[in-house]
Image (cartoon, rainbow, N blue to C red; front, side):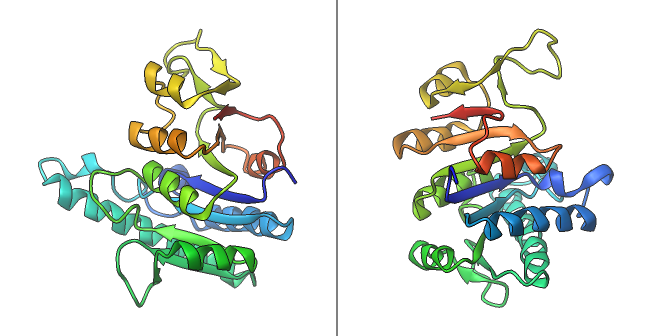
Length: 232
């Protein structure tokens, strides 16, 4: 295999389906099926899920940013519970860790325990973002990847990769096959927020940005197929 230990970053919106809000149970099952196949193929899988299908910081309007971000953290926990349950129901060992203390829901995030779970074949789902306001789930993915020494972050998006400008707006947008994080930061390409990009750069973390319209792309990228944009 190309990448043994993976950190899969899934957007919350991708769990909502056509309704654009909440959780589409059939999509959760599809994701669980793909993740189970990754584990069966010998990959060690960590997951970070956003919460945009329930709540985003801007949803709060005039609400204090700290309060709005805390609600967003809880949204990621709901999505993480759904994925963990779907995996467990399939007979796969899945373990939920949350940065927001919830002892009846999951264990606190612990990098050493997480690595032991991964080595034993468990899928580890990291909920609650970083546990702090003002940080995105992209930053959480970069942080968890560094903590577990992931070989790569698989960032599933709604576009084929990283473009020089928004491909939904500009028909002449050009997709990059490979970039450095310095280029991402200097050109403000929007792969992920600046904090996440700087963390990945400083800790030598690689990221593949690819289209999630076809969930099979997760399997292909994990196996090393040249899909999307590689940022290193």
